[in-house]
Image 1 (cartoon, rainbow, N blue to C red):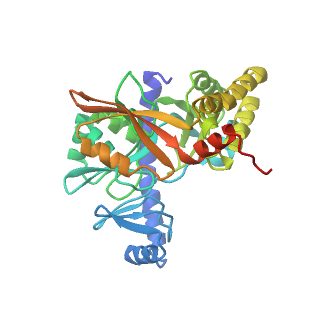
Image 2 (image 1 turned 60 degrees about the vertical axis):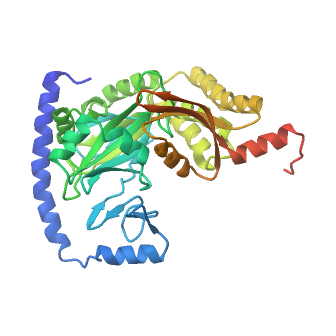
Length: 387
């Protein structure tokens, strides 16, 4: 982890980076004014006609990318909250950074394994949106009482927080150590620009927001030190890192640890018939490349991979169904009802336990995946299958 002096120098670099970028943005804007830009109203009209945008709960949501507008973009009256961009993945660190990060210096931040969530203010009320642009009432209930979030939006009502929510949510593994946490990894200002990484971290400190952990600051020639940090994250079972250049706006890539890939395979092995076709093979491929680059013990990881592929599936066979357990704590039962309404048709929800707690209600529930459960049951019942 960087020391105090390194952080101080990094902060100076971040501020200088921002000033330089402001000059570049001005030049870019002057260049763009020469081009014909399609009005947003026309893009919305075309998206609605092509069924790539929908109106729901008082907002317009781009359900698919359309006319250069990213999926998950939200239109609230005259205001637009941009969809969060996809971050390119690199499979190897040294050559991946060389080809994709032109900055001479960069930072690495921990990639949190949660679900993507944007928070903003609308008509003096907090609103939260998932990556796909769905209004998340559960997240609103969790964040609207957070003193740090309230203070941030009191001073910056037209800005957007982008973060990862983990803990006792409808989408992440439950925990007994805390309820939920919201890790901020980006901030969008009133002009729609993403802040530089060090300015963003500075604001998180100022307001008491929880930033994604900083792995360290690196120069291009310090790949060995970066690999050592990634090995530490791998041993700790962390998801990976996001690398951000300090000399160029928006320059970032992500890299996932082999431990995270293998953990994903273990969690998904019971859902083998419910996951996208490329989910399993991509993670086997990525973990193999990382093991080779980081010089990890092949036999040890091969054993972990084999255990992961069988563990969840054997549990599902024992139960005769494919399911995952979750926990949420809500103030009002109406929030739970909205959670249920937002669940996909591919799952069935069964409440395992519900009780009153001082903060409202705690609900433990199981998501059962219908297709995988159907296939498992037919196999166990002796039904034949043509290969």
